[in-house]
Image 1: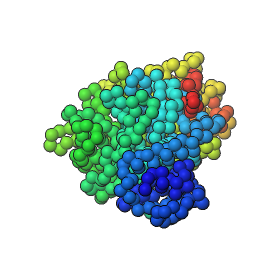
Image 2 (image 1 turned 90 degrees about the horizontal axis):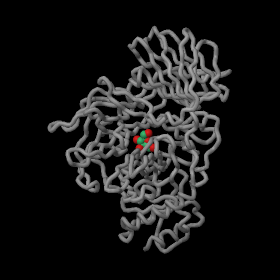
Image 3 (image 1 turned 45 degrees about the vertical axis):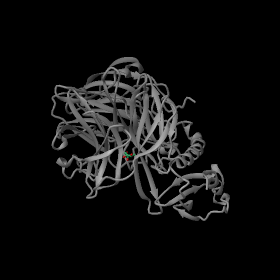
Image 4 (image 1 turned 180 degrees about the vertical axis):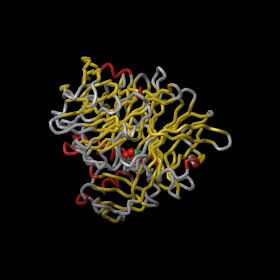
Length: 544
Ligand code: FRU
């Protein structure tokens, strides 16, 4: 029986919403079961978590190409379905220059790369609600890392290998092609049994992408279905694929595959044993070399916090990595990449002039109740940050291109008199004395408090007087420096606080009323330099 025939039994092309092929079955989910015709081929209709599915025995006539053809039909339906979700909704918390989704939920940045004369950045997106469901990839491009244009939604959960989410991954610029490596996530039956594949999509023109399907479709030994987020690197004249993984005894590890041609992949091993019990899963690996040192970025889940104020199990950090001929990859000296509330799943890329630039998700897994969800959108990406090694320390600093957004620059003597900046979008530099407290986003009802707390020798960020709905309200950054130099990027509903030239960063979303444009300093006076920032070309505003 042909693809056409199956689709017509399912009530026509536009009635098919999903395809699955567990074992010897061929399953179609349909929108409207009343359109399903009897057909001449036996099938069973089942309901799986509110979704009607037609279950056929899978015939030999439906092979790889036919399955991809069905995927393209579903992809066309999905393009129509999410079209109205690409119109941005108004909201007083909408950032002026950070990337936020027009509607729905944004999470990890994906495929961050410079390719053929432009920057490409993708992100995880669920268009229909502020929930973590079947993820799509949004594609943005930029000439300067600041002004971004919406291109399209090139990857949707349309195929048998990614029907429940085109999960995170990286990009590779190779032989003129832009290649996307990602994790295909599928869930089978009412138990929602997870099946994971590592997949590839390619583009010749940097705009249109063709899915090629899985390049890894089974699990390596000793690993659960939690293995995802491929990063491809070149090492010793071979391609390596790094994946975040969970072992069958529930430990987070880094899984590595090897390939000569980017198509056939051999499992190499699991790495990270030297970290022992270090979370139950590692997500979103990245790896790069800076100043002759290789670093691995990891998102360990289930780690105990370094602070009693932090109840979140999801962490994100960077470790030193070295390759040796006996053990393979060795990791050491894990440290956090951010000490604020909202930072996860970062990716880095190399600019043509050799800078390593990082962008992260300003949000956290599991947290979906924040004020913007009422307007129909949730989460945003961080500012673009350059990573550098200075005096042996890894530092993060806003990319120089951010100065393009600077408008007026003022110098202000801050004191306990609240000064109205008349904007929530600025770049502020100040040196804090120990014992002083800086109030940001200060209005009649709310403020974000940053205190240089002498007793705990730490910089404390307190969001208890804001409209935040998540449980944690305090973040603490231990500091042993004499002075506390801050550069603060504020953007309507977020702050990124770069401490002591970028040796540490505290990133947080900050929800306050529209009148919260004030600033004050308690316990000292100090001069602040403030650049008001103008909006970037609206990253949430699809230019169709
Ligand atoms: C991290 C993550 C990834 C996964 C993606 C799904 O936030 O859980 O591991 O690929 O999000 O959206």
